[in-house]
Length: 276
Image 1 (tube, rainbow, N blue to C red):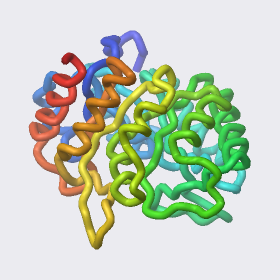
Image 2 (cartoon, rainbow, N blue to C red):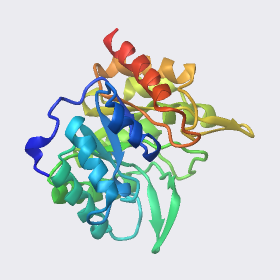
Image 3 (cartoon, rainbow, N blue to C red):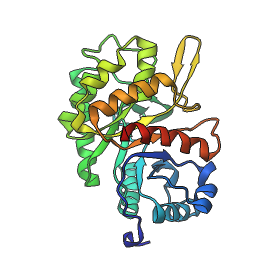
């Protein structure tokens, strides 16, 4: 499919994370959504129905690509086969940007199904920023790197999370995908000051914001992406928009997925806040 057939509308205001449960509805109804974020890992492999569906989505909407398997913080070598698949998709579908998580998901050849946190040290900054730079050079585009949720902290950490994220972005010259729900999760679990975090992040590095809803279990807030965005997260989001300006923002929902119209309502709330 030629890129000349792609929707060239700019990525702005609020978008929605595209999930398989909503594909039929989206392709038949073509709802008035500004843009979609697609999970890159769902579209690996040549041909197949999923790629045909993505081509249809891309012909109507701008997209961004979000990955979960680069394992940027791992001590294992970079998985260049994985990165090559991302480059192939990006070259074909021309996303607004490619994003990944500031974490590790594999070690010693073993792959996990969690986005695992890193110690906030100078050594870690040097390690991950070097890997990000290598990947960016190969892709020929900047990455947006997302702060992840966490449920523990490392004794070795020499700084707070905000300082760590900002330092990595500066050293690697990459962008930041600011997940305000994850900031809320850290505030709930560790007592961090979410508003201070927002005000300290370099606004000129923030290219996207994520919104989601989690669940409280046994005294911890879990980043389950299974609920509407709670009021506490909307409050942090308003502070993020005040600090970062008109930033493309995404509604994520991965578990207990409701009808698409529920996500539309959440996206509408985010767009209203941006406009205000």
